[in-house]
Structures are given as C-alpha cells and as structure tokens.
Image 1: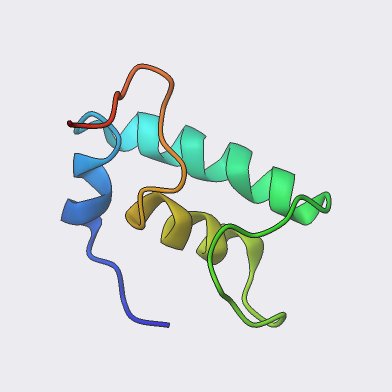
Image 2: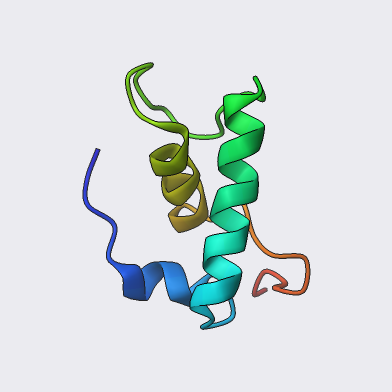
Length: 69
C-alpha cells in the first residue's frame, strides 16, 4: 500500500493532530477486535496502518467533520 502523507490526513481531521490520533486509535481498536476493514489490505498489515488508510480514503471521519457536497 502506498505511503500516506500526514498533510492529507490532517485535512480529514479538522487540521488537528490530536483528533487524528484519537480517530486512528479508536478505529484501529475496532479493527483489532474484529470489525471489517473498509479498504483492501493484506492480513499482515497492522490495524493502525489500516485505520490510517481508511482515514485517508475518506471511509472514516470525525463526527463533526461533515463531507463536502
């Protein structure tokens, strides 16, 4: 899977590194507990990495970060 720059991730989390870390950690815990992955990833990819790919892909977002129309 490709490298995801931090700048693109910050845009998805209201430009807050703290919100990004909390969002990624919560999603990584859900994946580790058995929730289905929202992006295609090999079984050997760590849950934290999958969570970052999901955020970068717009599959997961913060509750106050509405999608642009």
